[in-house]
Image (tube, rainbow, N blue to C red):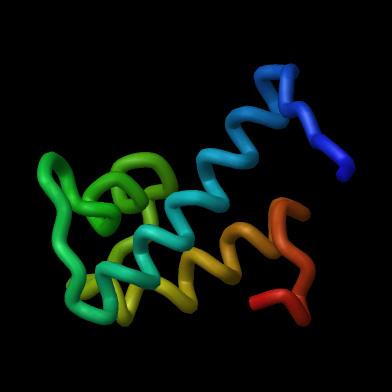
Length: 75
């Protein structure tokens, strides 16, 4: 079994951004959480604008792809 360790600040930040993508996907399907929504976190951190999580998801995927954090076919 191979273990990957994310131990640099850049790796940790990239993982967090990808985790937000998963949160946004679940929020678009109707799942809620306590605290700030994934939509509001993504809006605050990226400056992207959308009214719903479903509308934000493709914009965020494009944003991640443009920064090299997500392969274009991996959306």
